[in-house]
Image (cartoon, rainbow, N blue to C red; front, top):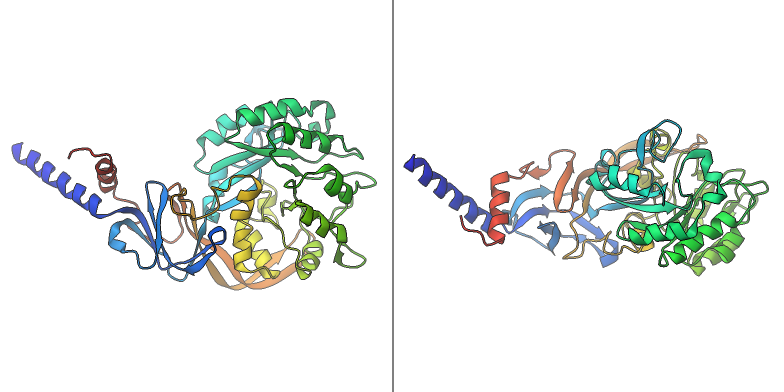
Amino acid sequence: MLKTYFLLIILSGMLCRLAMAQSYDIVIKGGHIIDPKNNIDADLDIAVSNGKIALISKDIDPKQGIQVVDAKGMYVTPGLIDIHTHDFYGTQPDHQYEDGNLGIAPDGFTFRNGVTTVVDAGSSGWRTFPTFKAQTIDVSKTRVLALLNIVGEGMRGGYEQNVNDMDPKMTALVAKRYKDIVVGIKLAHFEGHDWTPADRAVEAGTLGGGIPVMIDFGGSNPPLSIEELFMKHLRPGDIFTHCFGQLGSREYLVDLQTNKVKPFVFEARKRGIIFDVGYGGISFAYSQALPAMKEGFFPNSISTDIHVGSMNDAMKDMLICMTKFLAMGMSLHDVIQASTSNPAKEIKREELGNLSVGSGADVAILSVREGKFGLYDYTGYKMETNKKLECELTVRAGKIVYDLNGIATPVYPPKNVARSKQAALKGEDH
C-alpha cells in the first residue's frame, strides 16, 4: 500500500514537471496564417494556452505543446463567422424557422466548416428569444449570437406579415437586456408595398443602442425601390442581405439590360450600407454575382443563410459559398476577410474574427483540395473549378473540436497532463 502511495506521488510529480515544461495547450506548426485584421499573410506558428492565442512566431518549439498540429501546406485563419444562419430548431410543425423543423442544431454543421461563431438571423423575436436562448444558445459549443426579428414571434411563416406585432420598443428592450448575445435586428419576408416594417426595424435598432439592422427585403408588386431603402430608410452600418438575389418581386443590384451594377449601389456602399451574401435556397444567382464581380463589386461579408432546405441544395455550407467566390475572382485573402474580420465588424464584435495575441482562440485550418468541382446555383447555372476549400481542423475557445484527418498529435490531449498543467498554473501542490 505504501509502495503504491509513493509511486503515485512520483507519477504526479512527473506529470506536473511535464505540464510545466509544456507551456502551451496547442502548438500549430508549419501553416500559412491569413489574418486580415492584423495584416498577417505569412508562414508562422501559433501557440494556444488557456483558451487564448498565446504567441504567433516563427519556429515555436513543438515540445512546448501538449498537442501539436501539423498544418504544413495548409492555411490557418481565424475561426469563420457566419452572420446569417437559422438555428432555432424545434418541434412545432407549423413554425418553420421559429422553434420549428426548418432550423438546424449549429454544432452539427459549424465546426466541420471551420465556423466558430454564427448569428441567427431573426428566427426569434423579443417574445420567443428566451426559449431560443435556453434550448439552443446556452447549450451550444458554437458561439451563437442573434439578430432579433422585428416580429415579436419571430420567423413563423405567414405570421411575419403581422405589422401589429412589430414593436420597436419591446424589441429594443430585449436587445438591451441580452446585449452580450443580441447583435442586431432583422426584418424578413414581408410582402407588401409598405415601408412600415423597415422603419420599425430601424427604430428598434436605434432604440436598442445603435445596433445594426439586417434587411431581407421580402417582396411586393411593384417592387419597392432599393435605392430609396439604401438612401432614405437604412442607416450607415445597416446590412442588406441576399445581395445577389434575383427574384421577380424584388429589385436587384445588377441591371439585366446593361449587365452592370446600378450606379446608386456604389453610392450606397460609400454611404456605409453593408452588402451580405445570405446565400439561402433561392437568394443567390450567378446572373447577379458574376457581373458584380467583374466590376469589382465584392460582398462585404459571405454568409450562408443555412437551414434544412438550403444546406441540401445549391448552397451546401460556408466553405462551398467561399469556394464560389474564389472561383468568381475574389482572392483568398479577401474571401477570408469577408468570412472573419468583416462580419465581426458589421455586428460590432471586433474582438472576434482575428488571431491577435490575447484574443479568444477560435481557429480554422483550411486546405485547398485540387480536382474537378461543379458549383451551381438554384437556376441550374454551373461553374467548374479545380480548387475547393476544405476544413482540416477547428479550434473553439482553445480546444480542438474538429479534426478531419487526425493532424493533431496526440489526437486527444492527455487528460492527466492537462489537469496537472491547470493545477500548476493555479499554484496548487502536487
